[in-house]
Amino acid sequence: MARIPEAEIERIKREVSIVRLVEARGVKLSGSGDNLMGLCPLPGHDDKTPSLVISPNKGLWHCLGACQAGGDVIEFVRRAEGVSFRLAVEMLRKSSATLVAEQPLPATRAKLDALASSSEADSVVMRRVLDHYHRTAKESPELLAYLESRGLSADLIDAFHLGFANRTLGYRLAAKVVHEGAVIRAQLTRLGILRESGHEHLTGSLVVPVLGEDGEVLELYGRKTTSCESLPKKTSRLSS
Image (cartoon, rainbow, N blue to C red; front, side, top):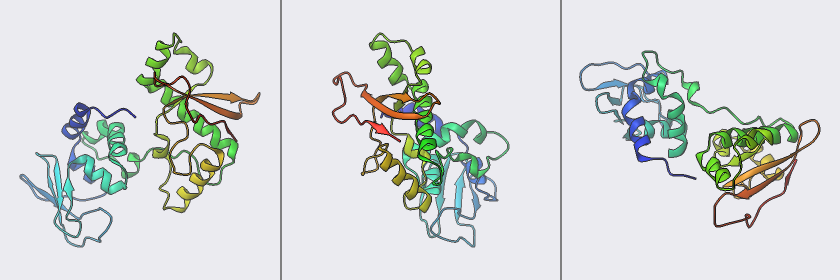
């Protein structure tokens, strides 16, 4: 997966208001001047007296209580949501426009839409997976460059519902330590979408679907987009 440009990380730190971000989790801040204070909303302790210090001008926060943690807006989302650095950046990318506005963002808006629930049929889940890969393909400069290098038109993405697997599927799954997450991940592993390790089977591949007459996803094929490989060594034939 491509590295997040340092300029983009700095833009998020600069533009996203740490005050709005903390208020979005229902924290009431008080005080004036260089620092504001409120109850720390981070998991791990039940704050009874304000211990979270916010420095609006610096875009920083620090918990003086049980957390003893601190950092910038990205680190706050990472700890509050229990996600990776990359996913925290993606969450802030989606909501940054609202987080600099006058009104705070509801805490639930920061979440990425769930891929599927654990009670849905294999055929529904496979379609959701393909739709995710398809949206990713249309937004991926890497895939568009690959198609151009092969003399192929980007119009083929919609014509054949092509997709691109870039390791973002897991961002739409509940954590594996949660029952819902464990069930859906087991289902995706059985279908061949995920490896036993939890990684996406077709990572870094152009995804080509085989569809039935009713649009049901019968199979998914992957071809690595890296120039040094004509075919992936472990391309999987996935079926629902």
